[in-house]
Length: 305
Image 1: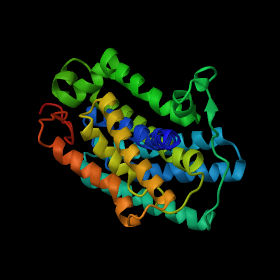
Image 2 (image 1 turned 180 degrees about the vertical axis):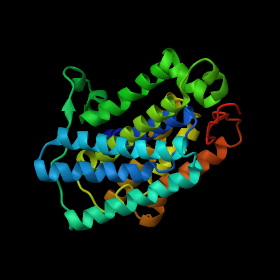
Image 3 (image 1 turned 90 degrees about the vertical axis):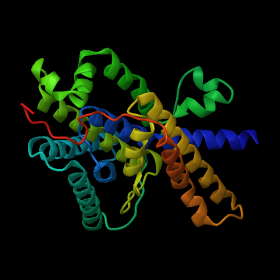
Image 4 (image 1 turned 30 degrees about the vertical axis):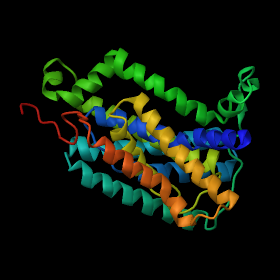
């Protein structure tokens, strides 16, 4: 039983990685007032670009860097459409999702063709800590992208709550007119947060294709980006609460994988549905409590309004 629990929890920690990168990036963007529903498309492009780079060069660091750049470029495009052109953010986000899905599928078919594998990031044992019974096995023998995802949570919390930049981000998302009157550059802040969110979504995709699964195929994310957006609402735009939501979802996911691997007599379609059922139930329960989103979320800024 102990081995089963260790295996499930260790898997849950690993599976939470892409959700954490994507949802923290989306949290920061939404706190500045920009809703991005194109997260899944950006993740797909990050996953493809990282995988293709590693497949051709064997360089994991370069693959990760390319994913970050590609994610940043998509973030720039999303910011241009939503902030500069003032498009309806929900509709444009769906458009970017479809674009990322289609482009990644096209590039996969034309540049790779068949499902292949690469050698991804290996587990990195933390000296001394990895030798702690049970805890060391679960938490301190993971790959570097897992460590980075969990380190991102307190770092983002500190930046958002304890620095002038974080104050500006939250001011832009809550009271952009007041922030503008105090000299805060609304456009610059929103561009920075959306681009940074795109970069994190690129890393989220890369964590799938060169760290967790070490493969790429069409629609690899299977809607993970939309779960990441849901986690932002679950966590009420607070990084620590987003972490708890990501762990809840990844734990249920790890359990359903274990059920399938062990061949337990439960319909596979039902086990695949489990994580999403839990997400729907939790979000429905959350709807009963009052969660206040940023006041300027999904609203273009017009000076003087």
